[in-house]
Length: 346
Image (cartoon, rainbow, N blue to C red; front, side, top):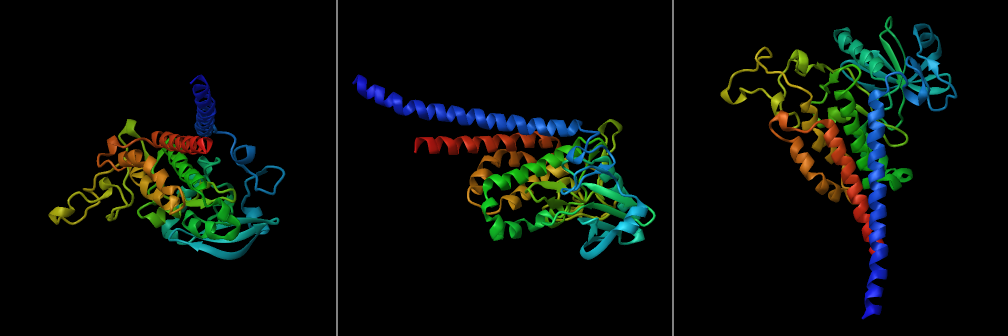
């Protein structure tokens, strides 16, 4: 009998210790991630790669360099090909001293105010979560930024389908990308330039196009042309454009409240709203990022409660981006613990 109890103890003890070790490891990972996010909020001087403000450092550069000015952009940058175009700007793949960069040019004078707003946000928000600014020229209405070959988040499925990246097509990597997305929202909602709302996000495709996929499979926000500021202390709310928004992707408070009565849309009568419109869209973005990868359904199961809260019809009852971020990192830790415990028992 004593021998039987000893055998049980010898079997259970390693399992328990393995689970405790996994718990401690995942807790440490969560702490380190949130600490990094906290530090990024306080990082107002240093930006990419340890460079000072108004400096940049592209991946192959040894030293930081001041932002390029008009004379350098005109003399040293060579256009290669057009890689994107919208209402506000045209984007070219270009080259500067052997480095590939993205050159953005104003597409229409009608949208110069949006273009300049995007530039001012790029300057004010420089950091690890925002595309790196390389230079600009107001005389020519041009902006130079770091080029990311994978393109926007819209390309995620195609990139991960490539043979050389198939080993990265896991729930870990996809959840990390979704967590990057939440981190960016948290940064924008608590930025050095105030509480900013992502207004250029009226459809899934348009929202995904605002984010670039980096070579090391993280996300940076790229398009900052429509980032109005919410200031609760002044009672300042926002409206994303002056046209009527429709569809299920936008938050309920962004829809015309009198559409059922047949009253035609009027921007003057449309109530404003705050950053909680970004929170409403989180479940849809995460669903796209997770895709149909193995283990993705388990991730979605664990995220069900926080996503339910994100879809609350009352924006005041939706969680903050920080609370969503904490839930995501907690889910990651929980799944790691479950998988570790299962492997230990095997």
